[in-house]
Amino acid sequence: MSPAGTKDSPRDWDHSGIGLDRYATTVLRYGLTPTVFVSGEAARAHAPMLEELQERGVELGLLIAPNYNSDAKKAKHMGRLNATLQAEALQAGIHLFHHYLGFRPTALRTALYSANADTYDVASAAGFRHVAFRLPGAALPVIGTVWDEQKNVLLRSGMLDVPVTTDPTEKLFNRFPLYLAPEIGTPETHVKLITLGKTAGVVCMTGATNADYWDKSGSAIRALAAILDYVTQCADEFTPIVLSKMTVSGAPNPD
Image (cartoon, rainbow, N blue to C red; front, side, top):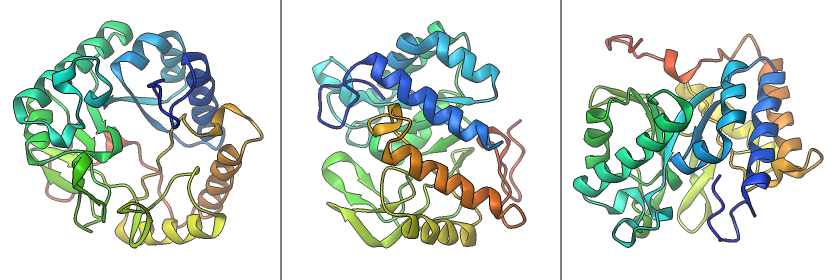
Protein backbone atom coordinates (compact mmCIF):
# COMPACT_ATOMS: atom_id res chain seq x y z
CA MET A 1 0.00 0.00 0.00
CA SER A 2 3.03 2.26 -0.23
CA PRO A 3 3.65 4.53 -3.24
CA ALA A 4 6.86 2.93 -4.45
CA GLY A 5 7.06 4.39 -7.93
CA THR A 6 6.02 1.24 -9.80
CA LYS A 7 3.04 0.76 -12.08
CA ASP A 8 1.35 -1.42 -9.44
CA SER A 9 1.69 1.10 -6.62
CA PRO A 10 -0.76 3.76 -5.45
CA ARG A 11 0.13 7.06 -7.10
CA ASP A 12 0.44 8.86 -3.75
CA TRP A 13 -0.40 8.50 -0.06
CA ASP A 14 -3.83 10.10 -0.46
CA HIS A 15 -4.69 7.58 -3.14
CA SER A 16 -3.45 4.80 -0.89
CA GLY A 17 -5.48 6.03 2.07
CA ILE A 18 -8.74 6.24 0.15
CA GLY A 19 -8.32 2.69 -1.11
CA LEU A 20 -7.42 1.31 2.32
CA ASP A 21 -10.38 3.00 3.99
CA ARG A 22 -12.85 1.83 1.35
CA TYR A 23 -11.54 -1.76 1.48
CA ALA A 24 -11.78 -1.97 5.27
CA THR A 25 -15.12 -0.18 5.42
CA THR A 26 -16.63 -2.56 2.88
CA VAL A 27 -15.59 -5.62 4.89
CA LEU A 28 -16.87 -4.07 8.14
CA ARG A 29 -20.21 -3.29 6.50
CA TYR A 30 -20.75 -7.04 6.08
CA GLY A 31 -20.16 -7.64 9.78
CA LEU A 32 -16.73 -9.20 9.24
CA THR A 33 -13.38 -8.19 10.70
CA PRO A 34 -10.52 -7.54 8.29
CA THR A 35 -6.88 -7.91 9.27
CA VAL A 36 -5.04 -5.06 7.55
CA PHE A 37 -1.27 -5.33 7.22
CA VAL A 38 0.49 -1.97 6.97
CA SER A 39 4.15 -1.10 6.55
CA GLY A 40 5.94 1.20 8.97
CA GLU A 41 5.87 3.93 6.33
CA ALA A 42 2.12 3.47 5.89
CA ALA A 43 1.65 3.69 9.66
CA ARG A 44 3.37 7.07 9.53
CA ALA A 45 1.29 8.29 6.58
CA HIS A 46 -2.08 6.97 7.72
CA ALA A 47 -1.87 6.97 11.53
CA PRO A 48 -5.14 8.87 12.30
CA MET A 49 -7.14 6.81 9.82
CA LEU A 50 -5.64 3.53 11.03
CA GLU A 51 -6.44 4.43 14.64
CA GLU A 52 -10.02 5.14 13.61
CA LEU A 53 -10.26 1.84 11.73
CA GLN A 54 -8.90 0.00 14.75
CA GLU A 55 -11.56 1.61 16.93
CA ARG A 56 -14.15 0.30 14.46
CA GLY A 57 -12.84 -3.24 14.89
CA VAL A 58 -10.14 -3.61 12.24
CA GLU A 59 -7.15 -5.71 13.30
CA LEU A 60 -3.81 -4.14 12.36
CA GLY A 61 -0.69 -6.15 11.53
CA LEU A 62 2.72 -5.29 10.11
CA LEU A 63 3.62 -5.61 6.45
CA ILE A 64 7.37 -5.92 5.98
CA ALA A 65 8.77 -4.98 2.59
CA PRO A 66 12.55 -4.40 2.84
CA ASN A 67 12.76 -4.16 -0.96
CA TYR A 68 11.06 -0.75 -0.64
CA ASN A 69 13.67 0.44 1.85
CA SER A 70 15.96 3.21 0.61
CA ASP A 71 18.95 1.45 2.17
CA ALA A 72 20.63 -0.31 -0.75
CA LYS A 73 21.83 -3.29 1.30
CA LYS A 74 18.20 -4.12 2.12
CA ALA A 75 16.92 -3.62 -1.43
CA LYS A 76 15.77 -7.23 -1.74
CA HIS A 77 12.61 -9.13 -0.89
CA MET A 78 12.48 -10.66 2.59
CA GLY A 79 13.06 -14.23 1.42
CA ARG A 80 16.27 -13.18 -0.33
CA LEU A 81 17.88 -11.77 2.83
CA ASN A 82 19.91 -13.57 5.47
CA ALA A 83 18.67 -13.72 9.06
CA THR A 84 20.67 -10.67 10.20
CA LEU A 85 19.30 -8.39 7.50
CA GLN A 86 15.80 -9.76 7.98
CA ALA A 87 15.99 -8.93 11.70
CA GLU A 88 17.21 -5.41 10.93
CA ALA A 89 14.43 -4.81 8.41
CA LEU A 90 11.83 -6.21 10.79
CA GLN A 91 12.96 -4.08 13.74
CA ALA A 92 12.88 -0.95 11.56
CA GLY A 93 9.29 -1.72 10.58
CA ILE A 94 8.26 -2.50 14.16
CA HIS A 95 9.83 0.76 15.37
CA LEU A 96 7.84 2.89 12.93
CA PHE A 97 4.63 0.95 13.53
CA HIS A 98 4.93 1.31 17.30
CA HIS A 99 6.00 4.96 17.14
CA TYR A 100 3.03 6.06 15.04
CA LEU A 101 0.30 3.66 16.21
CA GLY A 102 1.29 3.25 19.86
CA PHE A 103 1.50 -0.54 20.11
CA ARG A 104 3.63 -3.39 18.87
CA PRO A 105 2.03 -5.59 16.20
CA THR A 106 1.67 -9.32 16.81
CA ALA A 107 0.57 -10.31 13.28
CA LEU A 108 2.97 -10.18 10.33
CA ARG A 109 3.03 -10.76 6.58
CA THR A 110 5.72 -10.10 4.01
CA ALA A 111 5.42 -8.37 0.65
CA LEU A 112 4.64 -10.82 -2.16
CA TYR A 113 4.77 -13.65 0.42
CA SER A 114 8.56 -13.66 0.26
CA ALA A 115 10.12 -15.54 3.17
CA ASN A 116 12.48 -18.39 3.98
CA ALA A 117 13.19 -20.69 6.91
CA ASP A 118 15.03 -17.91 8.78
CA THR A 119 11.99 -15.64 8.56
CA TYR A 120 10.02 -17.80 10.99
CA ASP A 121 12.72 -17.70 13.65
CA VAL A 122 13.33 -13.97 13.14
CA ALA A 123 9.61 -13.21 13.43
CA SER A 124 9.22 -15.40 16.51
CA ALA A 125 12.18 -13.74 18.23
CA ALA A 126 10.58 -10.36 17.52
CA GLY A 127 7.42 -11.39 19.37
CA PHE A 128 5.02 -12.17 16.53
CA ARG A 129 2.36 -14.80 17.20
CA HIS A 130 0.53 -14.96 13.87
CA VAL A 131 2.02 -14.77 10.38
CA ALA A 132 0.73 -14.97 6.82
CA PHE A 133 3.80 -15.93 4.82
CA ARG A 134 2.66 -18.74 2.57
CA LEU A 135 1.21 -18.61 -0.93
CA PRO A 136 0.76 -22.36 -1.56
CA GLY A 137 2.01 -23.39 -4.98
CA ALA A 138 4.12 -20.27 -5.63
CA ALA A 139 7.53 -20.86 -7.18
CA LEU A 140 9.38 -17.64 -7.90
CA PRO A 141 12.89 -17.98 -6.43
CA VAL A 142 14.06 -14.64 -7.81
CA ILE A 143 12.00 -12.85 -5.15
CA GLY A 144 12.19 -15.56 -2.50
CA THR A 145 8.59 -16.73 -2.87
CA VAL A 146 8.68 -20.53 -3.03
CA TRP A 147 6.05 -22.55 -1.16
CA ASP A 148 4.80 -26.11 -1.30
CA GLU A 149 1.10 -26.80 -1.80
CA GLN A 150 0.26 -27.36 1.88
CA LYS A 151 -2.81 -25.19 2.56
CA ASN A 152 -3.49 -25.93 6.22
CA VAL A 153 -2.83 -23.62 9.15
CA LEU A 154 0.55 -24.62 10.58
CA LEU A 155 2.41 -24.04 13.83
CA ARG A 156 5.95 -22.86 13.07
CA SER A 157 8.46 -21.49 15.59
CA GLY A 158 5.63 -21.08 18.09
CA MET A 159 3.55 -18.98 15.68
CA LEU A 160 0.41 -19.74 13.71
CA ASP A 161 1.08 -19.50 9.97
CA VAL A 162 -2.12 -18.91 7.99
CA PRO A 163 -1.86 -19.48 4.21
CA VAL A 164 -3.59 -17.58 1.47
CA THR A 165 -6.27 -19.65 -0.26
CA THR A 166 -4.90 -20.70 -3.66
CA ASP A 167 -5.38 -23.12 -6.49
CA PRO A 168 -1.81 -24.38 -6.99
CA THR A 169 -2.81 -26.20 -10.19
CA GLU A 170 -3.68 -22.95 -11.95
CA LYS A 171 -0.87 -20.46 -12.50
CA LEU A 172 -1.92 -16.83 -12.73
CA PHE A 173 1.26 -15.09 -13.81
CA ASN A 174 4.92 -16.04 -13.83
CA ARG A 175 4.88 -18.95 -11.39
CA PHE A 176 2.29 -17.57 -8.99
CA PRO A 177 -0.84 -19.67 -8.42
CA LEU A 178 -4.31 -18.24 -8.69
CA TYR A 179 -5.12 -16.84 -5.27
CA LEU A 180 -8.14 -15.34 -3.57
CA ALA A 181 -8.03 -11.57 -4.04
CA PRO A 182 -10.87 -9.36 -5.26
CA GLU A 183 -8.62 -7.68 -7.80
CA ILE A 184 -7.77 -11.02 -9.44
CA GLY A 185 -10.02 -13.49 -11.22
CA THR A 186 -13.76 -13.63 -11.94
CA PRO A 187 -16.83 -14.34 -9.79
CA GLU A 188 -16.60 -17.96 -10.91
CA THR A 189 -12.96 -18.30 -9.85
CA HIS A 190 -13.72 -16.60 -6.52
CA VAL A 191 -16.42 -19.16 -5.74
CA LYS A 192 -14.07 -21.95 -6.79
CA LEU A 193 -11.28 -20.71 -4.52
CA ILE A 194 -13.61 -20.16 -1.57
CA THR A 195 -14.82 -23.74 -1.94
CA LEU A 196 -11.25 -25.01 -2.08
CA GLY A 197 -10.36 -22.94 0.95
CA LYS A 198 -13.33 -24.28 2.89
CA THR A 199 -12.06 -27.83 2.54
CA ALA A 200 -8.82 -26.81 4.24
CA GLY A 201 -10.69 -24.92 6.95
CA VAL A 202 -9.34 -21.48 6.12
CA VAL A 203 -10.08 -18.75 3.60
CA CYS A 204 -7.48 -16.00 3.66
CA MET A 205 -8.58 -13.15 1.43
CA THR A 206 -6.00 -10.67 0.28
CA GLY A 207 -6.35 -7.13 -0.95
CA ALA A 208 -4.06 -4.28 -1.94
CA THR A 209 -4.67 -0.60 -2.46
CA ASN A 210 -2.83 -0.80 -5.77
CA ALA A 211 -6.16 -2.00 -7.19
CA ASP A 212 -9.04 0.39 -7.80
CA TYR A 213 -10.44 0.25 -4.26
CA TRP A 214 -10.24 4.04 -4.26
CA ASP A 215 -13.04 4.03 -6.86
CA LYS A 216 -16.37 3.07 -5.22
CA SER A 217 -17.62 1.79 -8.57
CA GLY A 218 -14.34 0.12 -9.53
CA SER A 219 -14.02 -3.54 -10.49
CA ALA A 220 -12.04 -4.51 -7.38
CA ILE A 221 -14.52 -3.08 -4.88
CA ARG A 222 -17.41 -4.68 -6.79
CA ALA A 223 -15.61 -8.03 -6.76
CA LEU A 224 -14.95 -7.66 -3.04
CA ALA A 225 -18.64 -7.04 -2.42
CA ALA A 226 -19.56 -10.10 -4.51
CA ILE A 227 -17.18 -12.28 -2.48
CA LEU A 228 -18.58 -10.95 0.79
CA ASP A 229 -22.13 -11.51 -0.45
CA TYR A 230 -21.30 -15.14 -1.19
CA VAL A 231 -19.52 -15.75 2.11
CA THR A 232 -22.20 -14.14 4.29
CA GLN A 233 -24.99 -15.97 2.46
CA CYS A 234 -23.24 -19.23 3.40
CA ALA A 235 -23.26 -18.37 7.10
CA ASP A 236 -23.98 -21.96 8.09
CA GLU A 237 -20.88 -23.18 6.27
CA PHE A 238 -18.30 -20.54 7.18
CA THR A 239 -17.11 -19.35 10.57
CA PRO A 240 -15.44 -15.92 10.43
CA ILE A 241 -12.32 -15.82 12.59
CA VAL A 242 -10.09 -12.91 13.56
CA LEU A 243 -6.43 -13.75 13.01
CA SER A 244 -5.40 -13.03 16.60
CA LYS A 245 -8.09 -15.39 17.91
CA MET A 246 -6.95 -18.40 15.92
CA THR A 247 -5.46 -21.51 17.45
CA VAL A 248 -4.77 -25.03 16.30
CA SER A 249 -5.46 -28.36 17.95
CA GLY A 250 -2.75 -29.16 20.44
CA ALA A 251 -1.28 -25.65 20.36
CA PRO A 252 -1.66 -23.17 23.23
CA ASN A 253 -4.09 -20.32 22.61
CA PRO A 254 -1.79 -17.37 21.83
CA ASP A 255 -4.12 -14.99 23.63
